[in-house]
Length: 291
Image (cartoon, rainbow, N blue to C red; front, side, top):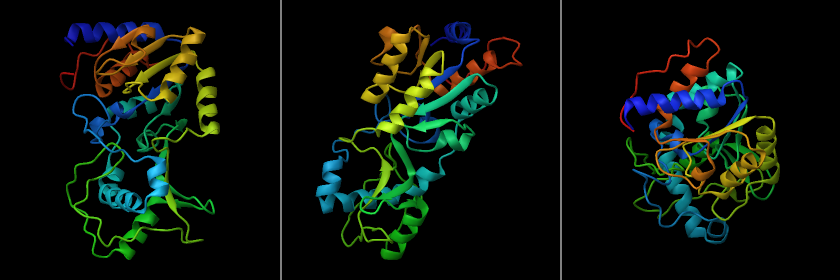
């Protein structure tokens, strides 16, 4: 997008949203500049066999493969740092412009950036649950258990991460899957697998945040996942302003008041510059690159 068009769209978005309490719905596209690839779009890594809940629960080999790949990628996934898009949203929340963030991501980067009202509708990789007794573990403790059980495992310095932190292992032979240290039950990361439903209470919290807001920005999501589309549909029914920031077209572009086909790391800081209470309302002319 040419610079003059970029600035014009940022100004249009600021005019549309100014004076409103804005809810954010974010997807994988906001974390790509932190080194975590997206599921879809340019540069995405194709996943021919994403883990489903049925396979995870019913296939011991699949569960072993999941934990090997997840452990190999965990260190790099957990080391990812918030980027300017995350930081801009945290600043806008602190200034009272943003009411909160509903994220489809499981990387925890919004919280690390300083956002305080974050609803992780698809869960988080920071926690691991026992499916038998309900015990909750810190992922770092599970990683330590894996290394104790499998002292031979070596985590490479550089890995090709998938969006959920998975890495394709060379082999799973001999790998011992971690279990609950309380009851010996099956562990599962606190994330929504393919084939699972978003927990009802978590989605209700997202709906509540949206009801308390008077505008919605979708940032970095193609809106392929139904939970995101359902939230956008609720915003559309209320006729509140909808701005979509995504490099590629989305399922809801026809409903949007404005679309900005550019990266979130440049759009959100530019929007913050215009909407901050201390802003002189001069559109930014600095761009980090060509979208």
